[in-house]
Image (cartoon, rainbow, N blue to C red; front, side, top):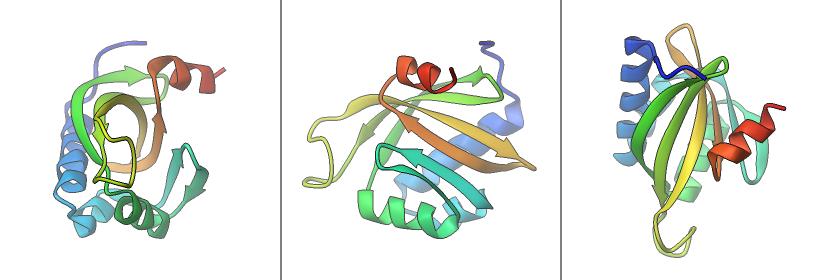
Length: 122
């Protein structure tokens, strides 16, 4: 795993996080491919409708801690929080592996830990 992340990709992912946290769904979707893949504790699916539904349903907020190159994507270390009643009551660390294609987010794979993200690759 190399730490270097392309500056354009880093900017894209910071913008994606800012839009998620602002609940700015049009911007989130503009930053994603039409077939964006979404992986999380409830499984895997794809498409902007799924991304919109996940963000609306979960109300997740993601504080970005760091970005690192990871396999053929970027690993984002984050702290996640949810509105009362929709998730963990306290903020929790997590990681998300992002894939980028043609300057847009093409996959968002959320894991509980770096170990879980690494295990998913083997």
